[in-house]
Length: 429
Image 1 (cartoon, one colour):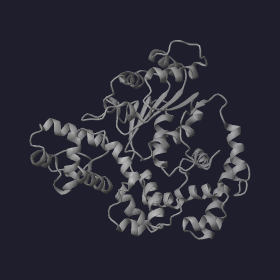
Image 2 (cartoon, helix red, strand yellow; image 1 turned 135 degrees about the horizontal axis):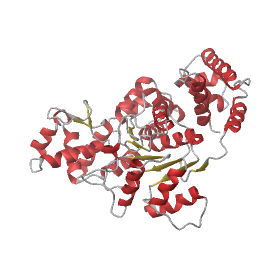
Image 3 (cartoon, helix red, strand yellow; image 1 turned 90 degrees about the horizontal axis):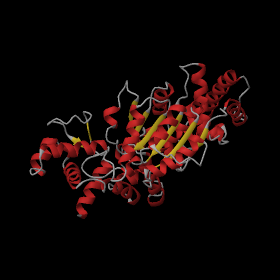
Image 4 (spheres, rainbow, N blue to C red; image 1 turned 90 degrees about the vertical axis):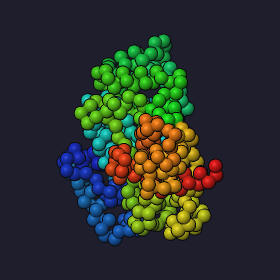
């Protein structure tokens, strides 16, 4: 059991005892550091609290857990008690295959998103879920963490990355022997998989969906030779069964948004950036002490992207000797690692989408759809402009203050780091 799994278990125990009980942020951090063997004083120093306050928070937690579990819990025996509880309550019939799933020992918050996703799945009425957002925003970590927390509800949990763009036949040939318990079967078809999803309760996770989608002007289009994935996803979404498919990606596949809705068996979650307190924890784990104001500035600049913040932390330590203010003051914060991350997304855009990004980055105050059309895209039809804008929105690259309602008076915007990147790239043309 990892520290993050312990946090998830404690949160589950609290809510099972009383729906109003749930771990808050500071309690989660106390459990994390207690699990790793820190003293109350060391925990207080890390969290910028008084030691007595941390000790009081911990004591109340251990007392509540003792009442729920029926065994005395303390800071010293926390690991032993939770591991015994997990072992005694673990299901014997859940078969798990995590493929190339990443380690999520350090999982930053996302408790609200986890709760939302758990609610959708626990009712046994959701057949497909999409988790979408910019690269580095935390989709992969969230999918792994969710699967770990929900494994007891399923007979099978299978996590697979599509990053290397495997053909669907290869995926089916990999998954079906696990579900059937036989490697001699020769029918590795969509029909065979659907039959297994009807007979058994399975949780399938496909990560890095964008790897099988086309770049270019329309988002969500499958690459040539990968259209059968669309057929599989449509059947899982539309046909009755007792399983659930989770997709993560930088954009939704064609037809997914049409099927998803609040009362639908298909749901979508758009993942946004983390808050300043979470940014502060990310920096602390990198050995940097930051004020909430400094974190607010970093969150604003990078859109709260956890990966961008981690990359920035490395640059702050190695180039700026840990001086966060100096890093923020130097202006151009599109350092090499972040440049590479943004390159991957920008290169997937069509020439028209790139031209729109340049136009917005140069003059965001006048970057309305009408102005873009009249001033920099007069030769392009209105339909093409709107299609390109929708694709950029689907890829989480543009936004506006009115939730992307593309009216003539709506000003489109880029995150500051993305705007800097686009302007730098324009200068290099």
